[in-house]
Amino acid sequence: MTDTTGNGTAIGQGGGTHPLLVLKIAIAVLLTGFSLYTALFGVMTDMVQRPVHLGLVLLLVFVGTVIPTRSGPVESHVSKAVSALLAIAGLVVMFYHVIYFKEVADRYGDLTQTEFYLGIAAILVVLEATRRAIGLPIVILAVVFLLYAYFGNLLPGVAGHRGYSVERIVSQMYLGGGGIFGTPLGVSATFVILIVLFGAVLESSGAGKVLMDIATALTGRSRGGPAKAAVVGSSLMGMISGTAVANVLTTGTISIPLMKRSGYRPEASGAIEAVASTGGQLMPPVMGAAAFLMADLTGIPYFDIAGAAILPALLFYIVLFAVVHLEALKRNIPVLDLGDLPSLSRTLIDGGHLLLSLPLFIYLIFSGYSVMYASFWALIAGVALSYLRRQTWLTPRKILRAIVNGTEAVIPVATACASAGIIIGVITLTGLGLKFSSFIVSLSAGSLFLALVLTMLASLILGMGLPTAAAYILVATLAAPALETLGIPKLAAHLFVFYSAMLSAITPPVALAAYAAAGLANANPFRIALTACKFGIAAFMVPYFFAYHPVLLGIGATPLVMALTVATAIIGATSIAICVQGWLLRALNPIERIGFGAVALLLIDATLITDLIGIVLLAALVAVQLFGQRRQPR
Image (tube, rainbow, N blue to C red; front, top):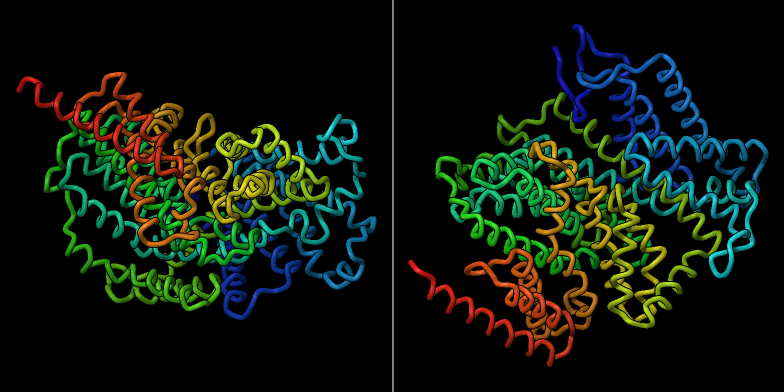
């Protein structure tokens, strides 16, 4: 019998199961068991928890790349031997810390000759695993930072530093929590893996399809319904997934074919799904791995971060919903055939029980329990609830598939976090973060708007080809302090960086969410990325609203002020969507497009005068549209 895991690896080939696949499943079960055990009975010390987590992830990477697949190339014996050596090296360099933890701790970072070579091996193994898991961008970045640590004394001016020996650099990267085993990996080893496993259990039980059917049933009767279903479905799926690519591959399998059938162009279908799935990382209660990194980095409780993200997330999806609606009007997309719509009542009866673990997760978080503890019991509840109806049972095979798919989804996050730890280690060692923040402040000449633009550009550039978590931790370390210096509250500054890093998933030339959507839409990924930027242009403005209006995050707000701020933010962001689409009640002429763009810019500013001017200008533009529509021949 033949079956497949999430990555298409054959479970049974030639009447049997491939030995390496059995090994891979065993490692995945071991990693899952270790994570569940520590979630229930308490996290081990950092230099045990993190090396065990990364060591098992490295094994999954190197074992997984040599398992035969149905479509992949056959690995040569040399490649298999190299992968085997790397797997062994990964185990040795990681579990050295576990075995000799006390001896290493007692030396306070003093590097022995053996540890020097182990440290070099650890850096090389981590970078190679990262290359295999997510590609070259972050590997190149990490190598550049390592070279900067060594050759920094040759650089002129503020960019230079006194230079560090190879031994000092290796010590920083391998011993203690300032390099590979730093905060990013700690988040992956605790919060992220439990959340991802929880999402994998829900997906295996069919909860993802239930969410998508609910979204389709709610929006399908309106013009452009399939695209609106993608928006609503991806926002709901984001609550249990937290990664853009996973959202695309889950909701996109349903929404993209529906959009194409209803008249959307292939690149538009893929772009809408890519943008909608990217925003899912901002959607509480789960959000993405970056939210847990933010909690650890800032000291702000995760509960407060999730609460602050609610309005920006809703703003993102309200604006995207408006963009999709305008696209449907402009392209004259028809309403879906009622025969294509799922029944909302039947969907809730057949699968609503699968979603009950989400309220449990939220309740436990609200009650003050840790994210790990809440994830553990939500995961157990998700498995138990699946047995309420025969068709949703999580059989042993489905549970195994959820474990394998969940651990596979952790691989890019864990390897990216380990490589990001190398970069953060160099930043800490050389003091580059302080210099970069000072550079942004001086380059912006004290202008908050220019500092925000520079920070967003840094996030988009550094985030190319990276998971949001890795992009966030890099820019948060480098640029967030500059925003705080210019008067933005810490929470707003970090959410601005998080939001900007998130949008790198749709920004060319390396747009991971767009690339994932391209395969489902059968369209050019670069065109999808460009179209996604067009559809998401209003979303690029949302972080500027909460940077200028921290009340959108619940900071120092009265209910009246918050309501007015939310209203102006929605109007302003929708105005830029109208400007980009060139359509409201009819096609916009160039002057009208400029006018709607001006409304958006006026409403970003937090002053009453600019808001009033913006509202008056908007009213005039809408009146012109109404007058022009009435004059059009019937």
